[in-house]
Structure formats: structure tokens, C-alpha cells
Length: 427
Image 1 (cartoon, rainbow, N blue to C red):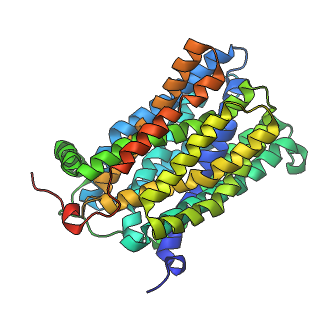
Image 2: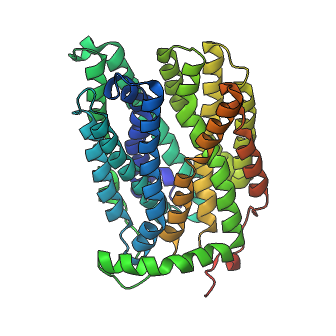
Image 3: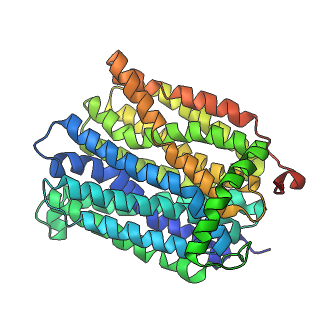
């Protein structure tokens, strides 16, 4: 049996994580929030720019969340997972590249380009996740999923390191200043994303459709009709329903920590350069840690691996309440890096074992829908606690509620699903 690390289609699939993680790191978590406030929303109060950014993030997330089940079902029916992935990738690449050409103060155009890029990024992941079932055997889900996430953290970290260096030493790259370096960085992300998507486009082969081939619009109409039955399928598969509810809670807290970490550090008065360096450190720690957790999940069970990650996140969130110095922030970044990739990769592979035969795109559409809807509960919780207590530290600690409830619900999901339980129930 050939190792998945030696198969061209598996490596090509995993390289897409290397490709699109540059957007998640350089754009989403790194430069865009700061640049949106200081360059595109210049001259306005920080709370105004924050609300603008929040609406842009929310709009992109909600649109993809609402479309995710339809997109997934349409891919299953038309056998178009790879084609759809590449189409949405193209949209994301164009939106990202456009950020490099938007002038100072033009926050509306920046927000629009960001929403377009975010939609392309999030929608493409639906089909990327579903393709896991085409490039790996069930016994390989944990290790192959972890390979994708680990390459993602490494690739995103490599380009982010170059981009950070560009802003610190713009003259080395023939750039006028840090602002120009950031704009050029957006273009490099678009090029990186497009370039490393080529192996997947060439070498990944998906399994045949579960229904007769249909045109895009016919498949879309049929997918709308299937939505109600898909909800019924999810409810009939009790283990899937429990997992999705648990996943929605704990991954919301994970996403919130990832997107709010820099803002939290700024609120504590820590220097921006140190915060970006800590974010970069997280990427490189997450690379080997995701691989290691993939093997742990393969040996001891993916659910147990996820629960271990939740416990670590719980402790790290409590620790953040007492955080005071840059050194402590770096220590926290290392701890988060140890589990950040693992909790995502193991969640994907564990869910892959719960998916009924022939429903990969449809069920992964719901999986991604829960992930996209898990982008508002944590920030909302933080906002409410901060507003009522006036304490940013207390607001961060409030996330332990999501980890606690999510972990308890996950414990109810059986580690191994019997084949009969995985079959699709008739309606």
C-alpha cells in the first residue's frame, strides 16, 4: 500500500492548503485589519473602522454560510468539486490582488475587494475539504488532513515572513515605504495562491457523481430541492448532528482567538511588531504540531485528539487573563500553535468518517456552513462581556464557555461509527 506522502494526488491536494493559507495569514489575520484602520479608514475613529471591518467580515461569512449547503449538494450531483474549487479560487485571487491597487482613504473599495476575496476563500474550502474523500482512504483521513493543515501553516508562514520583512525593510525590495510594501504583499498573496493551486488542478481526480450529469443551473435547482432532505439526513444521523453542534461552539472560539489575538495584544499596550512576530511564530509551530496531532489522532482516535486540543485551548484562554508582557504573549503563541492546526485537521478527518457514502460535498457543505456561522458567536460574546464589564481581559476569558460546552457535546459522539450507521437513511 503506497504511503499517502508518496502519492501525487494526495500531495497535490495538500498543496492547496499551502496555497490558500497565505490569504488567511497575511491578509485575514495579519495586514488587512491594521491596514484597513490606518490606511483605508484614515481620519476616522477606531470604533468606526472596527465596525466597518466587522460588517465586511460578517457579510462575507454569512453569504458563504448560507450558500454552503447548496454549493456542496451541487458539487455532489454534478461531480464538479474540483471545477468549483478552481472557480472560487479565481474569485478569491482577483479580490486579493485588487487590494494592492486601492488608494488611501478608499475604505469602501477595500471592503468590497475583501468581501469578494473572503467569499472566494471560504467557498473554495468547501470543495477542498470534500476532495479529502477522493485522495485518501478512510484509514488515512487523520494523517492526510493533518498534512494539508501542516503545509498550510508552513506555506502561509513562509510568505508571511517575507511580507513582514518587506514592511520592516522596504528599501531592500525596492519599495518606497511600509504602506507600499503592504500593498505589494497583497499582490504576492494572490500570485502565491494561484501558482500553488496548479498541482491540484492537474493531478487530483474526483470520484464520479452520485447522479446523472447535469448542467450547473439544473444541478443548482436540484440542490435547492435537496436542502430539506439534507437537513433531515443530518438529524437522522445523530452522531453527525451532535458533532456539528459541538464543532460550531469550539471552532467559533478557535476562530475568535485567531482573529482577535492581535487586537487583544494592542489593547494591552503591546507593540504591533511583536504581535506580528508572535503570529508568525504560531505558523511555524503549527506546522510540525499539526502533523504530530494527525498521528496521535490516527493512533488514539481523532475525537480524543480534538478533546486534548480543547483542554489546551481552555487553559490558554484562562492564562490570557493574566497576560502582561511580550514574553508571555510569545509563550501563549507557542501553546496555541501546538493545537491550532490539529484541532482543525482532526475535526475535518473525524467528520469525514461520519459522512454517509456519496454525500461528501453535501455534508461538507454543512460542515463548512457551521464553520462560517462560527464567526460571530465568539466576537459577540466578547463584545457583550467587554461592554458590560469594561474589561477586555474578562471578555477573552468568556470564550472558555464555548470550549467547555463544545467539549461536553463532542464527548457524546462515538469514536468509531459502524458501517451500518454510516449508510444514508431513506426518507
